[in-house]
Length: 159
Ligand code: CDP
Ligand code: MG
Image 1 (tube, helix red, strand yellow):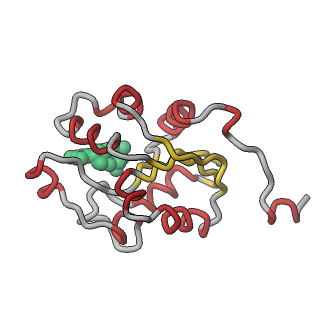
Image 2: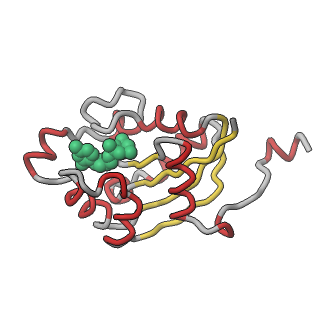
Image 3: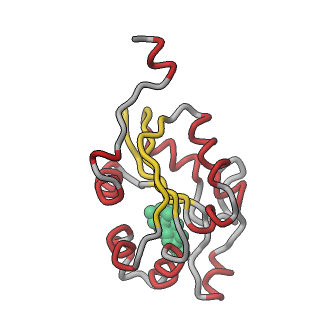
């Protein structure tokens, strides 16, 4: 029931100055930040992270986008965290992502616009899609030493 999930604030989120607001949403629902760092990945790393998408038509645009600037990577922990975070992040296309979701509230890019321009959908965040993906992605992005074990204030109060 307690799960860990990988979140990336993609280059568009970092460049728009949304790191604080996006992170605050996760803290506000009570998720615990287990790990966090800023990283500029290269093509090779992108192919590992997006291994499932390498043969898709949008991959070249996606790779160009994800290596275009630094991303903020974090691991969040909480009850059913994988599904919860996907709900908070919203649909892949910001244009159709529901209001109240991160993609729906902070972006408005559409598939039509991105395809016409030959670029990736700029949708601010990546979030692990399944238990298996979360496990693989956390191991890819963080070493064991970078995953912190600490008690939050409310946890200390119950000790
Ligand atoms: O990120 P999410 O799991 O919602 O979507 P995905 O299907 O796993 O695709 C990964 C990423 O590729 C998306 O977040 C978009 O940035 C990009 N993408 C795109 O640019 N054009 C598409 N037709 C589909 C995905
Ligand atoms: Mg995905």
